[in-house]
Amino acid sequence: MEKFQKEFQIRSYECDMDGFLRIVTLMNILQHAADLSATTLGFGFDFCLNNKLAWVGTNYHIQIKRMPKMHEKIKIQTWPSGENKFMALRDFVIFDENDTEIVKATSQWVLVDVAKKRPVSLAQYLPQYMYIDERVLNSEFAKLPECSQVNIQKEFEARFDDIDLNRHVNNAIYPLWAAETLEPDFLCAHIPAEIEISYKKECLCQEHVVVQTALENLISTHNISSQSEDKELARVRITWQLKA
Image (cartoon, rainbow, N blue to C red):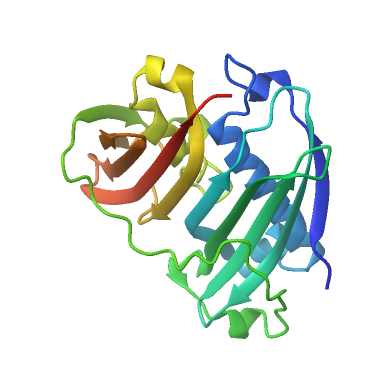
């Protein structure tokens, strides 16, 4: 079994005003690479569709040495990196044109019965599931803390364009909502160094979402909840660094 690898060139519309890759685009690139890798291994979208299943992300832990910039060519590697009865791990590394590692990430996924909305055993549907026993981050996805002292709060509505193939808000939108609560002056001067996300519940189109944020030094913690359904959707923690 080999690691899946794909090259990308960063396009202008994927970048912020300073030419750095947007958080939402980084998340989408990780998801796209995961989908392509899963497809080559036989348990991608078509497999899920035929078996009325869906891969649902539960956690991400991302460390960023630097964000790619506009027109830069990058290379991403991804591979299944572990599993237990219900959870599957997947790791990622992004390299620049000099083969220097600039982003690494680990993630956790469950295979869900779409009708019952419940996780299923990997052994039941993927008895030959294989993985490479190599983690780029030895994250155990510890429970993220709630905001202890909320000093920022902002409301959003889940847009039709935020909905993905699983019929709920795409994973990439949650860190975007989190970052959008911060002041523009802060975001102009800073870029993520580390992103941790714990997904709790699905969010559907037109749900009203409230994001509570606490910013202390260069660490922001975020509680994301649905006002419409009175449920916690996700927790996010971002460690920021100055833009180069």
